[in-house]
Structure formats: structure tokens, C-alpha cells
Image 1: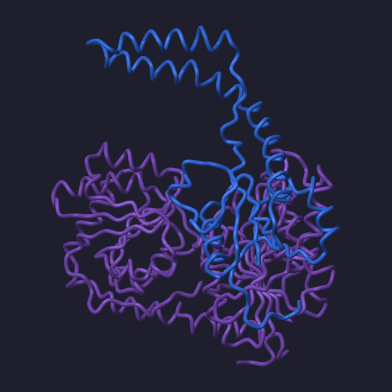
Image 2: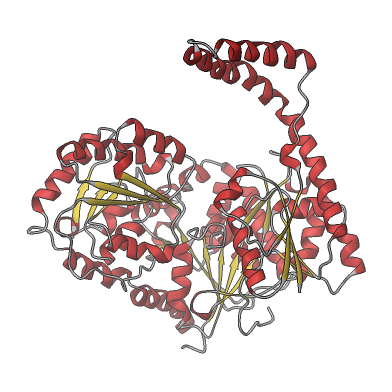
Amino acid sequence: MNADRHVAVVTPWYPDPQVTYAGAFVRAQVEAVSGGCAELDVYHLKSWPVGAAGAPLDADPEVLDLHARLLARADAPLATAGGAVLHRVPTLTPRDTAWITHSDASSRWLRTFLGGRPLDAPIVHAHVPVTGGWAALENARPDARVYMTEHSSFLAELLEQPAARARYERILERADGFFVVGEPLHDLIAATFPRFADKLEYIANPIDFGTARAEAPRALRRWLSVAALNERKRIDYLLEAFRRCREADPGLRLTLAGDGKLRPVLESLAEDLGVADAVEFLGSVDPAEVPGLMASHDLFVHTSRHETFGVVVVEALAAGTPVLVSRCGGSDQVLRGIESEAGQLYDVDDDPDVLVAAYLELRERHPEKTDVDAAREHLRAKYSYETVAARHFEVWDREGRR
Amino acid sequence: MRIVFVAPKSAWRQALAAESRAAADAGHAVSVIAEESPEWDATPIDPRVQVRWTGSSRISAPEPKATALFLRKIPLGALRVVGRGPLRGPADGLSRWWRRTVLGPLKRRRWPETKRLREAHRRTAVAAAVAEAEFDWLVLHEPQAVELGVDWLPRLLDERPELVTTFSFEPRAEAARGR
């Protein structure tokens, strides 16, 4: 416990009873660092869309007045990970896709919630700079140091909006430290704002290494995907590749953990492909259940087109499960140097035979020419709770030492 | 305490079911103001929780009489008659096609009016349900609870300053600090 560290975390994403996996990595960060903080308060700025589509936020001032009144009387500090305190701050936002309005709303409602006073903490760490980061900068006390971490998979679209892009540049300028979780985000921000390239640093999401199987699986027959059922994750591609692999080995099974709008379509596709009896749709899974799920399958398969970081890939290896992963950005980075030990990478391609070939090659090599334990230890040194907490403390404390 | 969850659209059913159950577990008398949906089957509300349905989802903009007669009753009735014989398969297929390509777009065209009617009904139903309920803790569980609350909540807050209002029911921090 460090009595000097009084930290506020400001985030638009945090697990809640409706979406228990949303922002699970922010809660993991809170859990990782809480033991080293005297006080740790989390401000969850969840978007609450109001009004007609396209209408400005102030179209109905009565709603805004009422919400301000409710925020002022509704602070019920909640218990969260590691003994930290959680404040839910419903953030009324207009129903539009302009990030600048969401950025403004985040700052406005946090200020309202705080009663116009600044955040009490001398260290503020925000997630998602355009919303959480801006809210933190606008509500931090003058002597506070404000850090932020970018995770967003939508950043490229955000930077195409001129007002949001200008806001982002101001955030980069004002932040005391600016972190990204993977190379794709680093490269995008550095290319868009070259004068801030030197300011960008890496910081990892912490991963639980506490649940591992006794030994690596020998036959890679029970496949697992942990992914939202959306276009970017390419589960349709996975189903077709699985069908082709299963033609040669009818004993294959596939578990799909995750939910999304495409679920009915994908369930129909599994029927049409004749693999419905071998595919199980689990729906949303509580983050706490993921390590056990990983440890009870033989192979983790990831088909995403684009990722900012490879959380689930690290989670699979933390559980001792080999991986078959698309080169989608973040995953390449986390597996650099341990590709053959961890499993098999393959190129993002629309042809399912690319995945089939990668699976057959891995099956040929595994387990003699893979070393999941070595991959696990390599990742533990980079992504364990202890390592990531130490990295945060090093960042938070270095300015204080200057 | 007597807790009422206000969730006029019930946008976050899973959370509503979990939080109202947790409130009942904690010994509170709990009721929810919610909207009917077949999706409640996936996240059922605890039987200890009293539910006041708004009835909004049953409301639709009325279909013009001519449409109802000439585009719905007559063609679908004819297909039903035909489907009683050996042409059941084709008749069923044609019926589905008719609903999808003819009646579907007409229903979608009435959707803005349906939305307006449901909104008006929700507003009235929520205000009435709150007026009838006895409570000392209100959970404004979703954005529309605040939007519809402008009609009755400001006066209630004036009259009952001791009323507890929150946006969720979740475990409190053991040692709640002032912010």
C-alpha cells in the first residue's frame, strides 16, 4: 500500500449488471493496481442516449435539468474490484455519431456529478481519451497529473471527424502521459499526429494467470472462440473453416462464447453448413468464467479482422491452451517471438482454406514442436497483474519524483 | 425499504432482473415498472418482485380499413382456404411472401406513428404506476426513466426531499467516502 497514491480512474467502459464483460480490462486494471493505492475511485461515464435521433442534447432542457438534479442526489459509492470505490455516472448523450458531442457530454456530466468541484485525486488515469480522457482533463484539479490509455477499435473512424480530430489533438497535447495497448493504435496515432509520436507509450491490459491446466492438450479437437458475434470477428468464416476441417475429423467440436446481433444469422449458418450438432453457442460469458472455459478446451481459435490488443489470445495462453490466431494487429504483437511455441498464426484472408491449412499445420506440429508453457511464462512476464501494476506505478510515480 | 425500479422501455432487461432480485435478496419490498417483451423469458424477473407492465408494446398504429380488408384479410384468408388442400406448401410459402413483401413495408410505414402512440402511452402509464405505488426509494434504471420523469419527478422531489433516488441497485462500498 502506498499512502501517497490517491488515484481516480475515469472510463466510459466498465462492467455492469447488463453487460458484464464491457470494459472488463478496465476493471482488471483497477484490481491490479488497487493494492498499491491508498484510495482508488472509479468514475464510470456510461452513455445514456436520449432524445430523437440527430437532435442536439439540449433539445429538451427539462430532461437535462432533471438529470442534473438526480446526479446531485444519487451518489451511492459502490464496491468494486480490489476494494476500490465505483461511482456510476450516467452520461446523457445525443443519439448521434459525432464523437465531439459525446466528448462534451462526458465532461459536462462528470462536472455535474462532482458538483462543480474538481476530482479530488492528484493522479487521474482515464480510458478512451476522446470521452474519458477529455472528461478527466476538464475535471482534474490544476495540480493533478492526468494519464490516459487508448483501447478503441473505432479510432480510425473517430479521427475522420474534423471536430473530434481537433479535440483529440488537444487531448494529446494536455495529457501528462498517453498510452496505447497495441501497435495498431500506436501507428495510427503517430501517423495522424506526428508531433506527438514521441509522447506515445505502451501499457498492457493485465491478464489473470491464476488458472492453468495441468498439461497442454494433446489432440486439438475441442475448439473455442471467445468473441462478440459481429462482422469484425468473422465467425461466419470460422464456421466454414470448421466445417471443412470436420469433414476430415468428425470428432471436432466448436464452442462459441459471446453474443451479438449476428447470432441468429450464425445459428442458421451452422444449420445450413450441417455442423449445428457440433457447434455450441454459449452467449455472453462472465469474464470470471473465461479462464476456466479456456482451460477446458484444446484450442483457442481467433478469426478477427482487426484488433487493438490480443486480450483473449493472452487469456488462452495464460490458461495453457494453444492458439490459432489471425494476424489482426494486436495479436501479432503479443505473440511476437513466441509464435511457434504458442500455436499458429495465419493471414487475414477471405479464403477459409487459409485457416484450414494453418490448423492442419499446427496439428502436425503439436505438441512436440510447440511449447505452450514457455509461451505462457513469456507472456506472464509482460501481462500479469503484478507486471502491469508495476508499470502503472512506475508511470504514476516518475512525475512525482521529478 | 420499498423500492420501485422505473424502466419504461426495459432496455436493460438483464440488469433489471439481476438488480431487482438482488434488492429482494437484501430484504426490500421491490416492484418494477416495465414493458412487456417475449425476451423476458430469457431473463425472468424474480417472483418476489411485483411487476407493473406498461402495456405499451401491445399498441400499434391502426391499419387503414381498406388495407386491412383488401391487402390482409381477403388475400391471406384465400391462401388459408387454398392451404387446407394439397397446395398447403405453396400456399404457406405465398402467404409468407405476401406478409414480407406487401404487408411488411406497410407496417414499417406505420412505425413512426406506432412509436409516437407507444411513447404517449408509456408516459401516462409510468406516471399512473408511480402515483399508485408506495415507495421510499426510486431507481431510475434507464435513460427513458429520466426523459419521462420530467412530468412527475421534479414535483415529487420537491415534496419528498428524503426520497432516495439512484440509477441502479448494486452492492455499496463498505466504507462509503464523501466525494
